[in-house]
Amino acid sequence: MIAKKYTSFVFSFFMALLMSGIMSLVISLFNLGLVDGIAQRWLHAWVFAFSVALPTIIAVTPLVRQLVAKVVRD
Image (cartoon, rainbow, N blue to C red):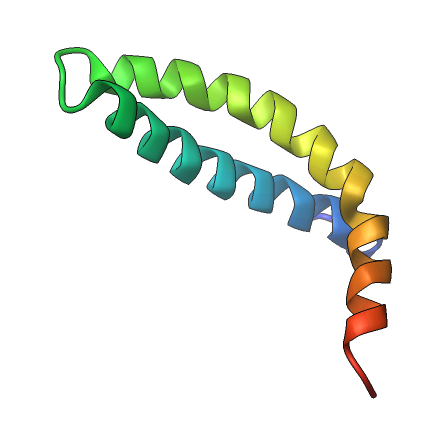
């Protein structure tokens, strides 16, 4: 198991994995439709999307936490 101190990175990893997978699938289907080889094209797009999503989520998490703190009251 992974140590609790890495919770934010583990959260970011799974959030990036799921969101990039879902969004790349939706966009691939929207742009290409159910064509031959869609799974391979989607997986290729997913790898690219994940490589952008993970560092982005890690970078913007502090900003998002600040924004949430400003709009949510105790």
